Amino acid sequence: MDDYILASTAQNLHEHREVFTTTRVKAKGKHFERSDGYIDKRLWAYPVLVSLAHDITGFDIKNSVRINVLLYTFFLLILYVYANRLYGLGAAVVSIFLASSLPLLGINGLGGGMEMLNLLLLLILVLLAGEYLRQPSRSLEGALCMVAVLL
Image (cartoon, one colour):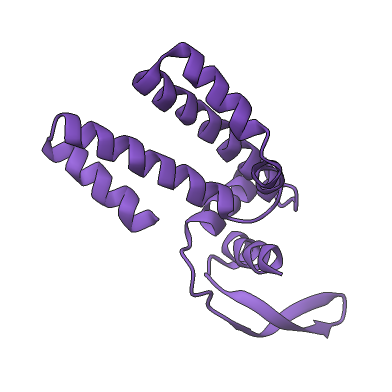
């Protein structure tokens, strides 16, 4: 049910530029009009990403899956970089294989939910926290706070 709510919010962002989840529509001839709905309480980052994909490629229900495949790819790439930086090339390759072998990660990576965005932001948060602990700076602190707010 969560994927439908995110898809509805992204569609309304694309068509009407409103963060709104439609729950009821009325038929007016050959067209449908929104008559009831609500504003989703969750973070709007994922529906905004999907609506940007709708703006670029046109409305397609597969855009949420395409966004998740891109986020899954970035997740694996950042996981590789992080493991390579900490433990070397062998551990980085093993971490990619271990992450790819998790069925739930594959399901979320090919689904329409916002779990991959949350996982990617969590991994970026851990990476930035490690960099900040290694060498503190204002720019890293700002990036760390921004990712924490988005999460």
